[in-house]
Length: 73
Image (cartoon, rainbow, N blue to C red; front, side, top):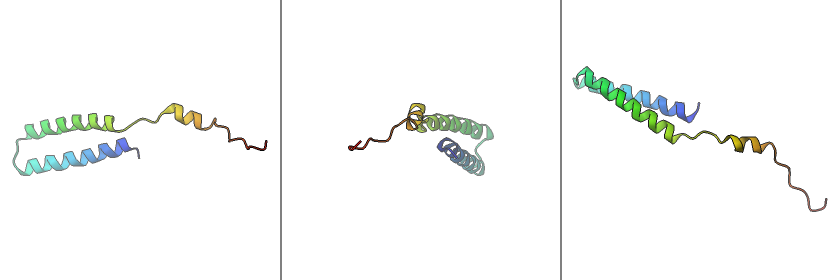
Protein backbone atom coordinates (compact mmCIF):
# COMPACT_ATOMS: atom_id res chain seq x y z
CA UNK A 1 0.00 0.00 0.00
CA UNK A 2 1.39 3.38 -0.95
CA UNK A 3 1.90 6.16 1.54
CA UNK A 4 -0.75 8.21 -0.28
CA UNK A 5 -3.45 5.58 0.24
CA UNK A 6 -2.38 5.07 3.85
CA UNK A 7 -2.68 8.82 4.45
CA UNK A 8 -6.14 8.93 2.87
CA UNK A 9 -7.27 5.88 4.83
CA UNK A 10 -6.27 7.54 8.07
CA UNK A 11 -8.02 10.71 6.99
CA UNK A 12 -11.26 8.81 6.35
CA UNK A 13 -11.13 7.24 9.81
CA UNK A 14 -10.48 10.66 11.37
CA UNK A 15 -13.38 12.23 9.44
CA UNK A 16 -15.80 9.49 10.51
CA UNK A 17 -14.79 9.80 14.14
CA UNK A 18 -15.10 13.58 14.16
CA UNK A 19 -18.46 13.47 12.38
CA UNK A 20 -19.76 10.92 14.88
CA UNK A 21 -18.52 13.01 17.81
CA UNK A 22 -20.21 16.09 16.36
CA UNK A 23 -23.43 14.08 15.96
CA UNK A 24 -23.27 13.02 19.62
CA UNK A 25 -22.81 16.68 20.59
CA UNK A 26 -26.02 17.56 18.66
CA UNK A 27 -24.27 19.64 16.01
CA UNK A 28 -26.65 20.31 13.09
CA UNK A 29 -26.20 17.88 10.19
CA UNK A 30 -25.51 20.71 7.75
CA UNK A 31 -22.45 21.81 9.73
CA UNK A 32 -21.22 18.24 10.09
CA UNK A 33 -21.37 17.95 6.28
CA UNK A 34 -19.53 21.24 5.84
CA UNK A 35 -16.83 20.12 8.25
CA UNK A 36 -16.38 16.78 6.48
CA UNK A 37 -16.08 18.46 3.07
CA UNK A 38 -13.56 21.02 4.34
CA UNK A 39 -11.52 18.37 6.13
CA UNK A 40 -11.54 16.17 2.99
CA UNK A 41 -10.23 19.07 0.90
CA UNK A 42 -7.48 19.93 3.34
CA UNK A 43 -6.57 16.25 3.66
CA UNK A 44 -6.30 15.74 -0.11
CA UNK A 45 -4.13 18.83 -0.49
CA UNK A 46 -1.80 17.79 2.30
CA UNK A 47 -1.67 14.16 1.10
CA UNK A 48 -0.58 15.20 -2.39
CA UNK A 49 1.98 17.67 -1.08
CA UNK A 50 3.51 15.27 1.48
CA UNK A 51 3.79 12.19 -0.71
CA UNK A 52 6.39 12.30 -3.45
CA UNK A 53 6.33 10.53 -6.78
CA UNK A 54 9.24 8.27 -7.62
CA UNK A 55 11.83 9.77 -9.91
CA UNK A 56 11.59 7.85 -13.22
CA UNK A 57 15.10 8.86 -14.32
CA UNK A 58 16.64 7.34 -11.17
CA UNK A 59 14.84 4.02 -11.74
CA UNK A 60 15.89 3.70 -15.38
CA UNK A 61 19.54 4.56 -14.73
CA UNK A 62 19.95 1.90 -12.03
CA UNK A 63 19.98 -0.97 -14.52
CA UNK A 64 22.44 0.80 -16.83
CA UNK A 65 25.35 1.13 -14.43
CA UNK A 66 28.56 -0.75 -15.16
CA UNK A 67 30.43 -2.51 -12.39
CA UNK A 68 33.62 -0.77 -11.30
CA UNK A 69 36.72 -1.89 -13.19
CA UNK A 70 39.51 -3.56 -11.28
CA UNK A 71 42.93 -1.87 -11.15
CA UNK A 72 44.59 -4.97 -12.68
CA UNK A 73 42.70 -5.11 -15.84
